[in-house]
Image (cartoon, rainbow, N blue to C red; front, side):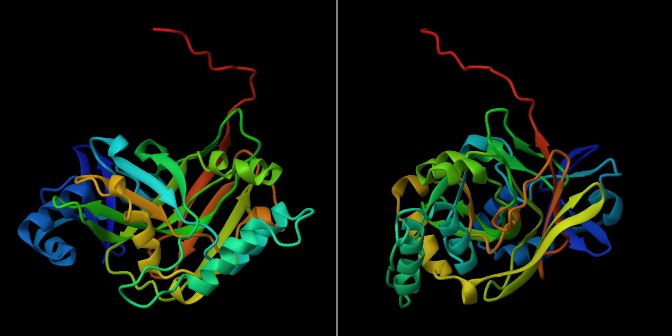
Amino acid sequence: MRLVQLAGPDGRRVALVDEPRLRLLEGYRSVYGLAWECLREGLPLAEGVARRTSDDLLDYDPVYAGRSGWRICPSADHPTEPARCLVSGTGLTHQSSAQSRDAMHTGSQPVTDSTRMYQSGVEGGRPAPGEAGVAPEWFYKGCGTVLRAHNVPLIVPEFAQDGGEEPEVAGVYLIDAAGSPRRIGFTAGNEFSDHLLERSNYLYLAASKLRTCSMGPELVIDADLEAVQGEVSVERAGRILWSRRIQTGERVMCHSLANIEHHHFKYELHRRPGDLHIHFLGAAAFSFGDGVRLDDGDVMQVRFDGFGRALRNPLSREPQSAKVVAVRPV
């Protein structure tokens, strides 16, 4: 079951994907609101969706292509308070990404910290049920204001060195009234990062992640994350510049999903009732690892089997400037 969030002539709506159409749901203008109502009613989300489908249909093709009065929103967000949406991620979960990161930072060190972190996951990232394994890498992307939808540009700020795609699956979570995390579903995502900044010094990793990112267009509420095949590509002037088959899911990750979720939500500040969490689960490959530098106007595409239509975002570079942010006393 796959959901799309839309904004249109009468405001926001949630729709069920019913290819080649979208079937609008009755009464709900966000996945967030729908999930809260299902929690209050004690209904599984899929059942709550089934009870709320209407006969109002939209042709999906023009909406997806951006040729409609309706536009696609991020597949999940906090509709009224974006500051209550935490966007974060776990890295070094896939061997290929660990190798790419290792190549960025190899110097005089015979074994890099990236290799050590990945290897610790291999050795202790898949604990027995009910037990905690080794903690994975964790990073902060921002609050809900960094989220971008399908077809919306991802921004390379004027101060940045670069920008590049990171094709990932992201988990979407709501903290319920008792302070317990509840998984709403999974979505395709482009975590987007400044790899040149990170390569200059691995201690800049945190800063390299403070960029816009995208998710969607569809939220899968019953996804099987055991083994997920996909493809990532970059288009330039309408032609494929680079592409790669990718795979993700628990079968190829060094950390189990349960271990990643435990280490994210073990912190009390990550369990505030009413908050929404978007957590990226790691990339298997990205073009920067193959020496590709993206230009203004390049289009990044991420697609995973079973996750609906591909997520597409152009890259947009802000003009370079010597602007300095000055702080003044109150």
